Structure formats: structure tokens, C-alpha cells
Length: 162
Image 1 (cartoon, rainbow, N blue to C red):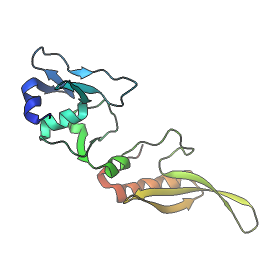
Image 2: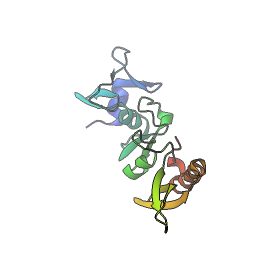
Image 3: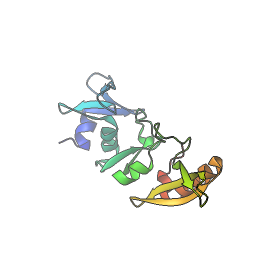
Image 4: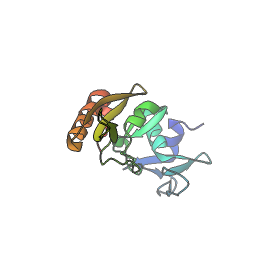
């Protein structure tokens, strides 16, 4: 089992990297298409670098280690925080596959009483693992502003507006 003591015996921390004390070189295994995060070999096994840096500084491994700025390559200790899976999802980026230019804003078509179609920008966010409808707007910029305020209100420090 990897411990803080083991890490501190074999590594020094420097600007988001763990440096081997034995040879003074970075211990980071370069990023590969098979892994989402940078890795480091500790005790004969490849492990996520950001989790080992968190353990090195705080002495425990949280359920999830979140990159505050969303950049998986930025492993500076100031950019790492403990969280649970639900909080980590709140800090997710805007999906590339989204048809909307803004996070938490979706285009929906409504049929009115005269069988005419009307397009509205709908805002919904996740609160306590449930989808919460915030409102529907004709103007996409207004919908984005409302979505930003809703994320600040419900997601707090885990709100991500990109």
C-alpha cells in the first residue's frame, strides 16, 4: 500500500511533479491514449500522478481528487482538491457534443395551441443528483446568464462556467 511516508522517502515535490530522490529526474510516465491522466510508477504499479501528489501533501486519498481548473495535466497542489464523485461531475466542462453554445442550456421545440413550433432555450442543472428545470428563454444569452447564476447558487465552489 502506498503511504505518504513511502512517497516522501522516494520523491520530492516540485511544480506539479514528483521527482525521484535517487536520480533527480521526473517520475512521471508520459500521457498515453489509453489513460486520461498522467501516471507515476510507485511500488511497481502505475498510479495517477494527481492522486499521489494529493497523498504526498495531505496524507490521505480522498474518494475523488478534482482538478479545480479542469486541466488534467495541471497537477500543482493548489489545483487539486478532495471531493466526491457528485461534486466532481459538477465541475465538468461543457460537452463538445452539445448542440448549445453554452453549458446547461438546451434548445427545445414546443408546439403551441395553433400547432406552430416555437424554439426556446431551456436551462436545467443537476442539484443533489436530480435535474432541476430553471426556465426557458427566447434569448440564448439570457439563458446562459441564468444558467451561470444557477450554477453559482447550487454548485458553489464547484461551479464551472466554461
